[in-house]
Length: 254
Image 1: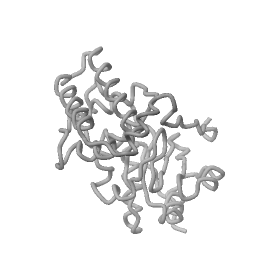
Image 2: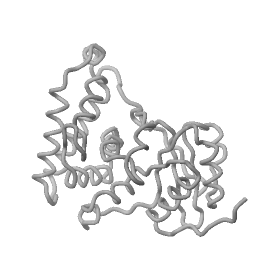
Image 3: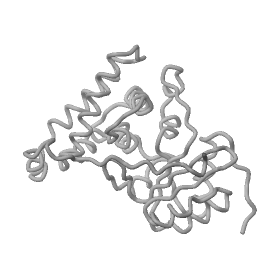
Image 4: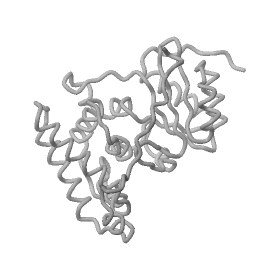
């Protein structure tokens, strides 16, 4: 086995090291979570938006599971052994004990309050998932904290909502929402909560953020809805349409 390498103290440098090492082995990993927003959004460095990002979230392919495990252990990350065995092919967790850092690797699918297949999304972009998918991981959160709102604000502040262009692909999000009432409902509630959060604070570039949020809502609302969407809408909120992820704990770091 190759000798262990020095793990950077800076989280973004550490994530880049993992991604570059994987790439050298023919494995593609892409960053998401708070670090991805920090890499793509200049506004994230504004003191009013800034938040600490210690942990690393990565998306990879299920077919690369065993190679990813070898890469992480070669770099010197400690596996969460029981969790990794139980979730093989779906999700892996590793720790950088020196820097008290957790690395969460999702394989093919991002599963939290909703489930999204991002297998093809890791083929796009450099180092991170595309902004559209990054935004989806935040909009799907049902019980938001300050960090979700800050990530959403910098995304809408720095990226336009487009119809088939770059930036935030409103057409892609609205198409997904037109087929799934549950995703539509969670995204809609998230966007409304974001609007309220912005209006209650002195948010730099608030007008731009609110205009872009409204543009996305308009695209979601106007997209023709599928038969399945309409049938589920009849049930409405009487039946829960999302999951609340269980805390998996971090006993190894405590």
